[in-house]
Amino acid sequence: HDELSKIEGFDLERALAATKHSELDEALVCTLYGYSDVSEYYRAVACRPFIHDVTVPLLCIQSADDPLFTEGGVKCREVLPVEELHDNPNIIYFETELGSHLSFIEAEVHGGVSRHEHTFCDRIIDAFFLFTQDKVKRRVNF
Image 1 (tube, rainbow, N blue to C red):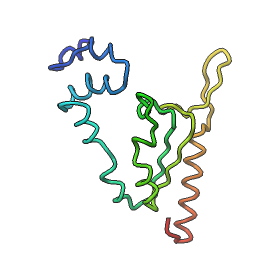
Image 2 (cartoon, rainbow, N blue to C red):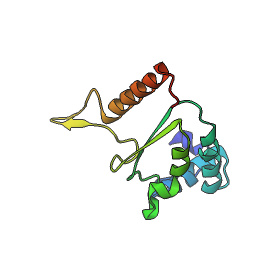
Image 3 (cartoon, rainbow, N blue to C red):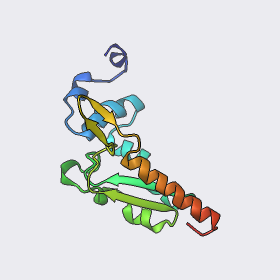
């Protein structure tokens, strides 16, 4: 709390009162990095302008229930440039129904949480690397 109070213009109460990710971005990220509002921040960090420049294999894993993209009942496919991702032959866009935000974790709760050694993401990434390695060996366009 002491460190946050040193940030010029930062309003801790406003950040703590945020109930949406965009409200937290407005209160915290915009203040920390000097953006005038979340629209400016979101434009600055958007991937859309660079999608056509991807020339190496890229795997994009997205959950349809990710709260960062589903605020206000919006579907992530309405926000993300899915068609542009599909248009680039170097990109694989993989969407799951569930997973929230960075929650593709598999765990057991038997007297405490223990993470599985190889989670869903581990297996998907392993498969992606094997797929791309095979394409490179056979010198096939991705």
